[in-house]
Length: 66
Image 1 (cartoon, rainbow, N blue to C red):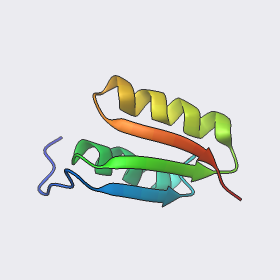
Image 2: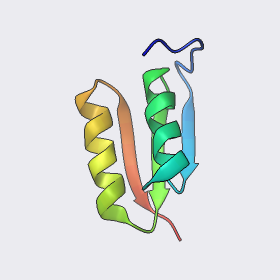
Image 3: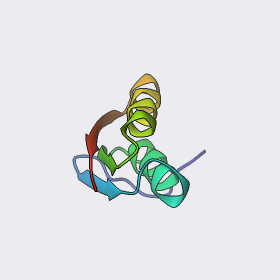
Image 4: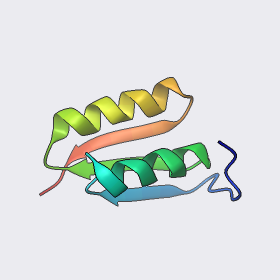
């Protein structure tokens, strides 16, 4: 997927990143070059998403957030 904008050099903090819109925006922002911080209660899902983003060449950090 071609991303029509760049977020290189920026950090995106995403609440609700374990599923739905949060997870999707995390992936899109990472593909646009942003470092993403994934926050949610379901830390197993954010950790899995962080690994997926890292495997694709992005930077991601999963943190617990309630």
